[in-house]
Image (cartoon, one colour):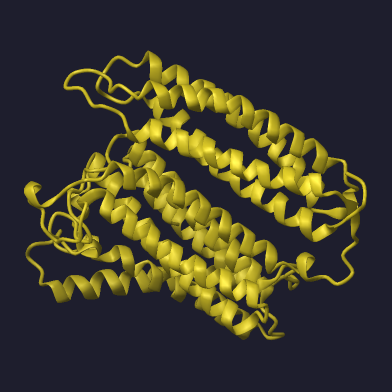
Length: 427
């Protein structure tokens, strides 16, 4: 629903906007449908309650966005607007969820074949990936400083910043902050689920670390804008920090990889005592670790290249050539190491899932990433105008997002390689 709302706010047109608005209710109805099918209650009333619970939870989380709609009707008091918007939100959500649940309760129940905790971790990872996408758009549009203060937005409470003022780069920067709040809610929910249902000390520790990293990531995003902890909007009190912006971009991708790892550790496959074990070598494990290190260097060089641009008054910004050369040359090293790791992972038997499948995945991702990198490079070096071309925005954002997927998949290859293999004497 947040993805659909994000696209709708880009003002795609009247017809497209109406279709997206209708899609919001369709998604919520689908949530009620799935909840009813998965509900263990043998009674239809129990399945309906499950759909209503999904709708109520959705509406509660969406309260994060309702405050931006206040103030549009200047003739109404804040309390009357609150009653209308909150009441309408819960009413529409409950109706949509109930309709979906009513349809879903008529069919055969489904069986959830994945761990609930693993599913929660996957959802958290998905919200972080969306945060990376919105952050990529902010960087691509050169709108990182469109909102000068934090945690406020132009002096407004972040949750109450008027929708009517979210235009241009301000919208993308402010929406990125709101997505950060969604990540926080998801991470806290995962922590509660892990503490309730997981006995593994490693999983619990990683989840706590994940929460701390999410907080740290948010603080780095703030300090990138203000340079110091202040509520001031005055330029003399602010010192935007590009170095923190680079760290913010790199750090976010590792947070995404961490929550993907948590999802793997919580999966039934990982916990299965009957998991088949294959013979492996220390060289294979070192290769996986090397791949993660190589990807880190590539990620860092790309972040430096994007953030350390030099804006010009009437032309496209210039970029540090050393970072460009490092990123391009290291791409060759990254490609070779990724291909070797992927091919080696694919040599394992298919029964050792998901290791060979992940090996195939990183081969596909590195191919897509290489193509996106070429496209992004061409658009960047041929740009002549101050305005960011749509092609450049699409290619650079997708290039960054695919890089995050490649890093996370490589971390999973590294983890599953150790889980599914035992060291042999051969090298």
